[in-house]
Image 1 (cartoon, rainbow, N blue to C red):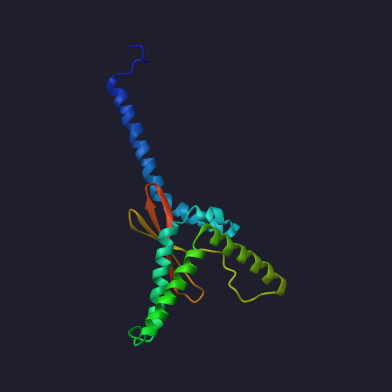
Image 2: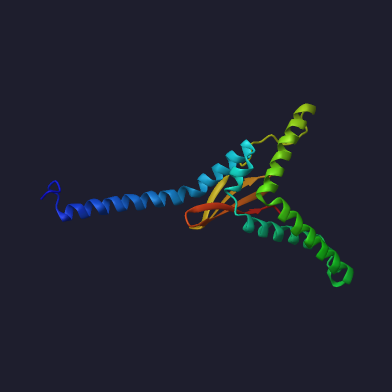
Length: 185
């Protein structure tokens, strides 16, 4: 017995215990994943770090969701008679194209960088002229968290008027990313 006096049964138990610990650690990591992602998004927003923010965003899913929400909002505000006319159809088609283009331009790493740079410039401008009445609340405060499934997690915040804004994170493998923003209707 040149292995320090351990039996095969003891080695098997040791390996079983190690495997159980590794599985528990993996489960804990996956369970903590969305909280860590929300924290990373919050830190990136505070630091105006578009690259760090982009690392936590599923851009294709977010684009698709925002386009659908904006097109739905436009359709709800249109006169019900308008889509039945040729000019109404052309107008709705043009609106859809504008929405698609705007969302495609803004929901990219470069677009996020531009938005954040605009925010930095606005805060500098705002500081130079005094209080503009814009809310000074740090981003993503007072969140309510909820697992909707093992691969879907929501974090809900409220606008200054009290309307809910829901951040939806989805899991792909071990990684959680922001895949949807649901705005009040």
